Image (cartoon, rainbow, N blue to C red; front, side):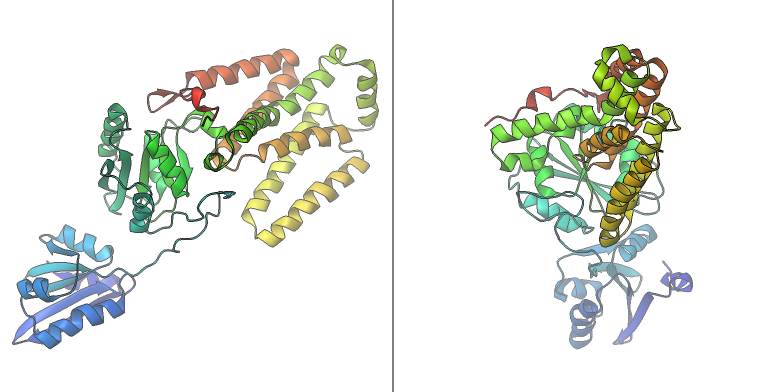
Length: 433
């Protein structure tokens, strides 16, 4: 194994040569991945002071808990790119772990608001993430199965499960899928889930950065997938009612939580149906409205140049643009953008006669209801079905609305999440103590 050929395109690769009793010792490491002080204090100093010139002496004398013998070039490259330092003596190689901490550390979850419960969250550090789970479930029944996936990236991916809770058929299914993954690079959790998921509009997996949420699901027989260099942990399977359940529910009074979950379910329906229901009533089925309400709606729409259907599409698109802008730009600017979009643009459009006030109210009700959900996958699902419902209602009125509702129900009932029915955990929707 000739390591000198690696230097050409790797300027951060360092090779330190030490000669002790006419025996050459090479210390090989990436300075961008390794902690220099650890190499100086625990490798270079002990070797030079104690004159360690054989691999056996080094393994006996150096203060390291993680030694690994290198037998081929593949293992050599894997250890180098994983932050290990390689010691080479007479074509014998051994590696010692000297990783430099390149992650952001343990901090509070940024994408999932914590109302009650622990504040720690997963980080990019693979071992830290494992520790955050192990410190919560201290039992030998907690099992960890590790894979190396990615022909080039050699990314560590692990399965966490409780041996007495998990469904063995589900575990075998995931093992088989992992063994069939053939990718060159695994960059994050999405690279893994794209090969496992059914790619439906309704996602069959949960992505979270909260260790307590992962622990809760492990106890309930699910599987957690940890991917190296990412702070998002995958939980499988996912069911429809998981969209309306939150880990913070476990820290609150169960009677209040049941009401909250019902409110979330109602908000999901309102977010999807409200614009299309208004379009159906005012455009095709006006006879269903009381005369006074119909006259009021007609007066508000006086002078508006667009049909109600086009008006609803424009307002819905405008809100989604503002929501995406608020998500992507810095926090302070985002708050200002929300105020400008919601107040200035909405009021100006109504006064200019481009948009009717009642349509602003309808879209606002739908949009605020969707804000109850911070899962991007679920938010995108609501967006898609909102447009589908609008199109059907804009073409056939209430008949189109009922047809689109039927399509949604059939879709949900027909879905599978890793061979489980998507409506599998309906009975767990009501929290009991």
